[in-house]
Length: 423
Ligand code: 5AD
Ligand code: SF4
Image (cartoon, rainbow, N blue to C red; front, side):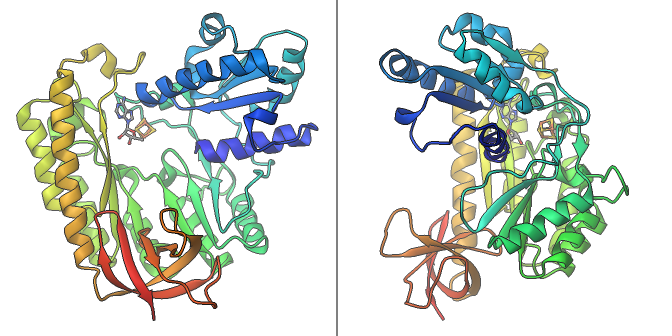
């Protein structure tokens, strides 16, 4: 979502006459788009600020701005406590960035952190880098208020773009040469068109039908809004990718209730069963938090047990990070740091083992892979992604081109990557 927001901001400032440069060495203005979801993300920004400090003294760098969730959360404190910061702009105020940059050049510091109930940047075409895969934000904000999460406070109330404007943008992306689009939302499956009341399943099928050869992906879904209709829609369109990211967070119903997730492990596994009954080869990934307040060893074991039973293809796994103003913050942070790390490592080890075993079952299978280009680790080999969102490495021939779909037979794998050959 932040990459997508940065593309929106890039368009806004370019339209205002600024030029985007590729290195901070050549920049008069540096804008850092920030995340507040965990303390670690914020720590990285403070580190970046301290490295920019020297720069600001010795180069042509005049203006430093903080955009996004940290600006929203910390407001004037960000500028008061960091003298090199000139502007702080929250996620719903990006239209003001050019004006605030202009004022910053005259020495005036600026803050714009009002949240909006309507801003979706619907009329702004993100300034995307050339490539084959595009992000497309279909909604903003979140109304779920999971007790650990700062997002409803930093990104405000949930609001969706119109179905028509999204479908038009997908068509344009195809015309511009993109082969894959990922529809984005904090809670993408609670999407509702403000004009027609169409739901996310309607949006997905409209996009899939409008551009039948475009690969359509989406993140992130909430288990509560994972309707039968949505699963049936994914199953019935060849170009909607067979990959679903569905955050479980914990395997303990007591902790899920404290997290205000509004589902039980039983509901979650029932949804997974329905997905697998209609789409047997669907890849699944999840998010897990280790060491939520009051989590006992027994709760933790239930998370391990749920991972064993569900067997996700992959997972994003985090240590609980207390966030001011959230409901969970008031519960304290009573799981000791060492214990949190221990539990997190246990979860990571188990998940790696599961991912590795699942990938072994891919050997001999043929995947349709969208070619991305040379592999990051070994430039001789090329990489792409399967429909199921797995990275596939292979030896290219002269006919292989970026953006083409090739058929690759899988020969070997690790927990994170598949290796194969052209067929
Ligand atoms: N601590 C740890 N992880 C968190 N997440 C959100 N808030 C926190 C927090 N306070 C994780 C959740 C969410 C993902 C985007 O980040 O797992 O799904
Ligand atoms: Fe945060 Fe929950 Fe909303 Fe996801 S659904 S953004 S975890 S409040």
